[in-house]
Structures are given as structure tokens and as C-alpha cells.
Image 1 (cartoon, rainbow, N blue to C red):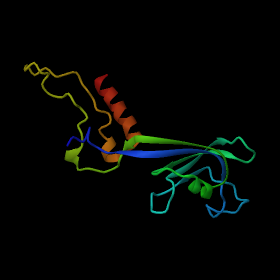
Image 2: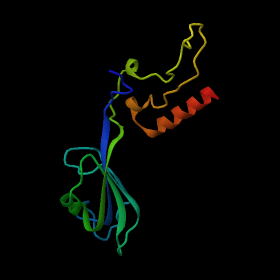
Image 3: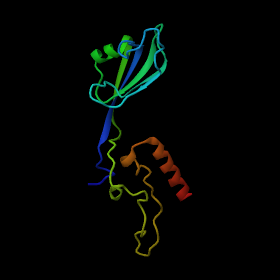
Image 4: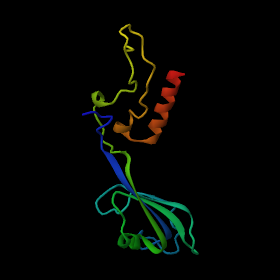
Length: 157
């Protein structure tokens, strides 16, 4: 297989909720301020990957939250997580990013896709073609993509 084209991608379910987080669900006092961001480990029984605050909601005391999950959060799950909801919007992001599956060094895609002979047989190198997403399969994070893109730009500048 080809690691550049044959790798699996992660589907992420994004749910936006205009509502109030349930203190009981998070085992906090009703008087305790609600968290702005909640990050989890993806373990059995954990319904979401993250919850993030995104602003003031449309009803008094409510907020807009964005939840990421591996599966769709149905109304029953949302009713457990939120004590009140006035609006819900669901999006499915297929191919959000590559599944993180570290590989051996030999299996990493090349950064420079056009190295070597320019095709004319005279040894003239091709114009550089950089694959800035080469790090995506082994580490799958945006920070490495930024560094890779900068390195590619500096290399051809």
C-alpha cells in the first residue's frame, strides 16, 4: 500500500448546543461555575472527546458549546450532558484527520516527492515538490503541519 493515499481517516461528530451544562452529569455543585473546556480520554463510557465553550447562548444563563465525539450524540446523551437545551446542530466531519497510527521510519512518506533525475536523463533535478503532510500519519497534529510547511517554503525560497 501507499501510506500517502491508503491511510484511514477519522470521522468526527461535531455537535453545537445552545444550553446549560448539567452540574449532576459533571458531579459539580450547581453553584460552581461551569467549565469552559473539557477534554477527555477516549475511553469506554465517555460520551464525548471534548466540550468547548463558544459564547453566550440565546436564553438567559445558557451558553453555546461545541462537542466533539466519535459517534453521533443522540438527544438522550445530550439530555444527560445538558440540564437545558434550546437549540442543537449536528455535523459529521468525515475524514477530519488521519487516524493516529504511528509507523516505522521506513514507512513514512517522503517529504521531497520530486528528488532525483529530472526525467531528461541528464541528471537535472526536478523543481521541488514538497509533501508537507508527510508527518500527518505518524503524529497527526496541526503543529507539525505548520513546521513542515514553513520548512518546505524555506527550502524552495
